[in-house]
Structures are given as C-alpha cells and as structure tokens.
Amino acid sequence: MCTIAHLRLSSPLILAPLAGYSDLPFRILCREFGAGLCVSEMISCHGLVYQQKKTLQMLASVSEEKPVSFQLFGADIYTMAKAADLLNEFKPDLVDINMGCPVKKVTKKGAGAALMATPKLARQIICEVVQNSESPVTVKFRTGVSNQSETCIDFGKMAEQSGAAAITVHGRNWAQAFTGSANWETIGRVKSSVSIPVIGNGDITNYDDARKKIANSGCDGVMIGRAALGNPWVFCKKGRPVNYAQILPGVLRHLYLMECYLDVNRLFAVVKNHIGRYFKNLEHSSTIRKQVYECKSFSDLKHFFTTISEKPILVKDQQEII
Ligand SMILES: Cc1cc2nc3c(=O)[nH]c(=O)nc-3n(C[C@H](O)[C@H](O)[C@H](O)COP(=O)(O)O)c2cc1C
Picture 1 (tube, rainbow, N blue to C red):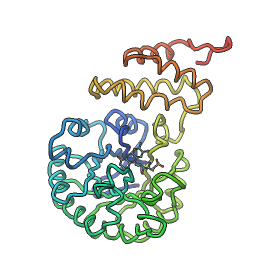
Picture 2 (cartoon, rainbow, N blue to C red):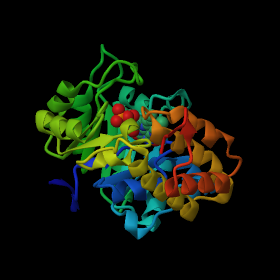
Picture 3 (cartoon, rainbow, N blue to C red):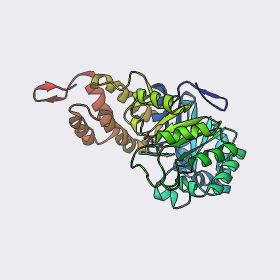
Picture 4 (cartoon, rainbow, N blue to C red):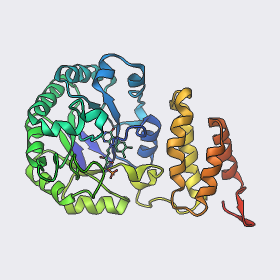
C-alpha cells in the first residue's frame, strides 16, 4: 500500500509528469488502466501567477481522474509561494515541486535540476510552498548534480525536514540528463535515509519490472514515464496487448477523451504526439503510421481508427493486417 499523507493510492504505480503528454485525457486514461496517481505536466509558477491562458488550460481536472498531483516549477521563492496559494483553488490532491528537469530552458533560470546545485534556495522554496499549499507537497529530484556530486541523500533529508510529504527520486543526475541508466541502488539508499514515502523513478519498462523495482529498492511506489507513452497497459498486470484488435479499443478511448477535454485548436497536434506510439514494435506498424500521417484532421483520424476497428481494411501482400 502506498500512502502519501492522508492519500491511500489504489496502486503504487504512478504516471510520471511528462511535459507535452500528461494532460487531462492521458491522465484519465492511465487511471482507468490502473495507475494509482497521475502527475500533471510541469506548470510554470510565473504562468500561473500571470494567469497565462496556456498555463490555466493545464489546470483542467475532473473528479474521475482523482487523485491527481499538479507539478509546479520555478526558482523564485515569492512566485512559487504565490503559485502554491493560487493552486489551492483547484484542490489538487498533491502539489509536486520539480527539482529534476534538466532542460536548458528551465535550468538556465535556476529551476528544475539546477535547484540541486542551490540546496538553500531549494529548501526555502519547499518551505514556502508547504506553507502556502492546502494540499500535501512532494518534491521530485535526481540523484545529484553530476557523478562527482551525488547529493540525493542529503537533499532528500532536507526535503523531509522542510515539510515534504513524499519525495520522488529519478535515478540519474542532472549532468546525465537522459543518458546512461537509472541507478536504483542509489534510490534504495535514499529510501533507507528518510522516513517519508519514497517513489523511485527511471527506466521502468513494464508492470513486472515496476513490481520488482519496488521490492528490490524498498520504495513505496514508482513513477513510470516513457514506458507509459502509447502504453497505458503498463499500469496493469496483463500488460500491453500484442495485437491490433486489442490495442485499438485503447486508442479509441484515448481519442474520445482527447476530443472531450482538449481545446479543438490543440487537438490534432496532441493526438499526433501520442497515436503513433501505440503501434511501436508491432508488425506492419509503419503502414499504420503512414496512414495516420496522411490524415489531415482529427475527424479524419477518428474515422480511420473507427473504420479499422470495425473491419479489417489494411491489406499488405494479400494479407489482412488487422
Ligand atoms: C517527454 C518528457 C517530458 C517530461 N516532462 C517532465 C515534467 O514535466 N516534469 C518532471 O518532473 N519530469 C519530466 N520528465 C521526466 C520524467 O518524469 C521521468 O522522470 C523520466 O522520464 C524518467 O522516467 P522514465 O524512465 O520512466 O521515463 C519528462 C520526461 C520526458 C521523456
């Protein structure tokens, strides 16, 4: 059982924050497939304080996705505190602080993983967000700044002392960005060093792998990022189906949720981010992807997938593919 503050998660497998992907429709979908909690895309504290339209759209939520965590990023203490206060209106179950993003656009302003290089500032930010938030606050960070500076144990203790209700550790350091592999031994050492729940993160590929990593590291839960893209089945024991007939209902459900909840102007671009990924490693997937890229609108796409799920129409070398 994974419990964070008062929140008992139905599963210790959590959808990681994924900018450009973990929007409301994808979060609902992952919850339906078994995720115990989903984390939003990172939300700029400045965007929230200045009430930017795009930022406010990211705060869309519905009761059926609950529990949900909204992730804030920023490096300005006052603005992070104000953003935490503004988030109260949206009643997220948790508020997460991003202290792990290695992307230049974020770190050059001192936010994301750069906060691991300025632990005093990180501490002040956590304390202020905790003080201003009506929801429990969690912190997501990395193993450290670089191989020479793996500070995650002290950083985890600092987060705990500052009032964090749980921490997530991505088993890579800032310098590694997404290269190399996640160090689960280090994640396990952080777990042994603090008393709050620890969520491990990095390179989980499937459900069994998630369960094994929980057992071996002693973590309370795990976050799954890339392996969930085009694969919400990663959150259930049966795993991803191996044929088109079983995958298509998942695709149609995702399309339906996107149509329900996304701004029509963004719909087509977001769909294209997700859809091709559902067919990764399947036979003849290039034929499907080609057809997807030939679609000129969301309704073309929906029509294409509805038709192929009703009757097999993709034929190659005289053989029906679906
Ligand atoms: C496309 C993409 C977007 C991401 N966006 C965020 C984000 O908004 N906030 C965050 O803390 N981490 C973000 N991450 C990092 C993931 O949450 C996760 O820590 C990382 O991908 C490692 O987990 P995985 O191996 O399961 O993918 C992102 C990663 C990817 C690939």
